[in-house]
Length: 432
Image (cartoon, rainbow, N blue to C red; front, side, top):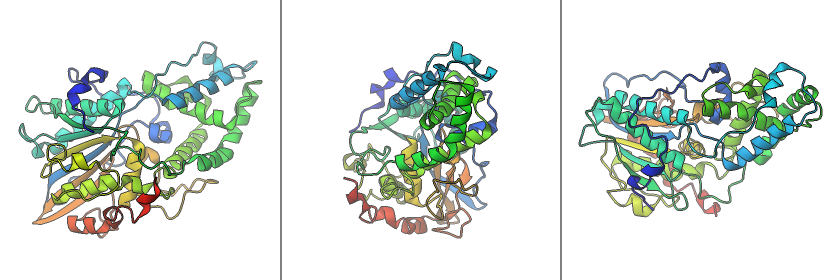
């Protein structure tokens, strides 16, 4: 179902229409934040490059993750319990533990943090500056968001940043469609209850990377009896406190770069086996959005029998065709499903749970950091409709529909998406 954006403005606690923020420097070395996986602050995976000579962008499709947030309710309870377990130690060896004497758990639950709001605002400014030629006062971006408070707030802050960057030439684009996550929703991975979790794989990796950290902390904190799951929880307090309080968390000082590399792979595995290639019911959860993308690229009605909302997608007011700029706001797991449905970031095989392959291309901090974005640019190249896909500004090779130079024709792209166009080759029926 659709709810008008006006109904949610009251709870957009970090809407920044009246200020001009810039996401602050968190004071943590960039080399460390890259190991925070899906909890990494946004960074460009590459510098944006203009389209090739002779090509002009005539349509943009933006898919963006919400900005930095507090932990989920369940994760927060686990983090707090592990921290208090460490605090119960009889003594501590090392000044890095001194902060525990007056530390208490202060994080909220689920919602966008101010830093995450600023990330979203900054993204809106960037995208106006880059694509200003595609919009005007009567042709603003068409916005949709999944019905999660942090996702809606992200969309509203992006819109405010987009308008501000126009120096008053444009009003804020309206958040026209908010899709109920309890129903058919192409912006959330909520419709495949039979999909396996990644618990077995992440547990297996914890057995590899966590024991040495567990031993070290227990030697430093006699009586704490920290376990492998506690190690993973305490490591994650570093990124969550840092983005929430906008200064380096003291938890970061308990761990080494090797420890964070272990966390990075733990989070890589989590997404790979949740909605990525490692889950037989992972990529099919991105099919609906891919079919919506095809409709927009070709100016043809949506053809899909998976998680699209047919009521919304058949109504020109809630799914218009012929627009020059579309912006959808979503979650990281849904973005991973969409990447996998399209066929980008392919792997030679499933990620090992016994050792991390340093040559893999599956680094979640590069795929879905906080405020991640995938952009599909449709281009007129001498009368031919071409496209390219950028993930966090890195042009994807698209070997499945072109020569691997990051560009293919729209026709070839549509042909390459047989998995989506066939509703997942029958796999969708296994979801429920």
